[in-house]
Image 1 (cartoon, rainbow, N blue to C red):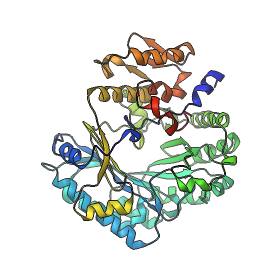
Image 2: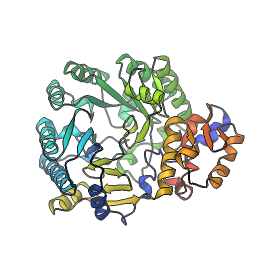
Image 3: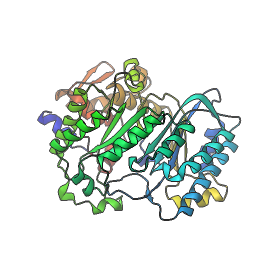
Image 4: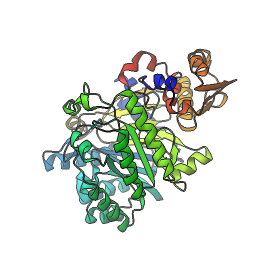
Length: 444
């Protein structure tokens, strides 16, 4: 990576798993909007569903998710009951039965509900929604808690894709982030899941963690590749101790600097590509036959709150504390605090606490940013046909001069050199970011 690119890589920009980002959500959008958008759903189109479980047995120091340590089983049971009640409340706002084509459990650690708890939620979902035959059913798991019994239970529930939180295999790094996870635990989880018939596996990794080096990450890549996951998501660690109290226990002196983070990202991409994985977007890798790789080849890659996806559905309904729902005309996010969420649902209220509405201009900006993030190219006559983009193209002019972007008429393309800082290119089309750059993570 040349010196010019490294300068841009230091900039703080959103990850753009959505536009507008959640930082722009306000309390002016809430339950009233959610009910209207639910009522106006196109019933001919299937939806995606996200179920958030914000509890873990232990809270890792690096975690930036909405998660907390579960101290009592009755708290977890009460939360599960609230999610089931929310499913019913959302269903009451629909005009007819809705089909689910994709279902994703995230956390936290969703398996903390136990096999019976997961089955209970699925029973309620089936009561109020129609699950399409062959629907994608994914769940995020902590490999330390994947038993043969859990793997078999997940298979019985129809789970057909699992994402394992590996993060890093180096024991010193694990100690520094409060997540002791021997590699044999990960390997055992992989064997148990595959033995149960769940073959589609994704590994989540993180770079930029304390004590990580290019050398240790190369070793991590080698070990991960030996287990042959179908996909790998490798995110840059976002250190936000002001917002995440658990991160305050990380010794900032052990964190790699910006230059080292850039070198780490390059080394990871080089290693996985050498092992036959295709690079997907900025931070995913997939085997050539995986659905993500096929989506890239067909120009149908998308980006949502779980990262890169081949899911093209317009509507995503989120259940659980802090979950975000996406509709044609806007976003709503549930109450983030789990006890407050449970109380709101117990009172018979929808839990939407904030969100944003999308007018035509915002939708066109969203289309443009997603196209850049997924294809490294945006034809503005297609993504933003009615938008005057003179200001945006002027903002990109320095990147053109630095060889990171090509502008041909109304087509904006990241060059091969500029792809690694495509978030900076996308940010030119985000007027919110210009005032709020300090709230986001580094571009690499």
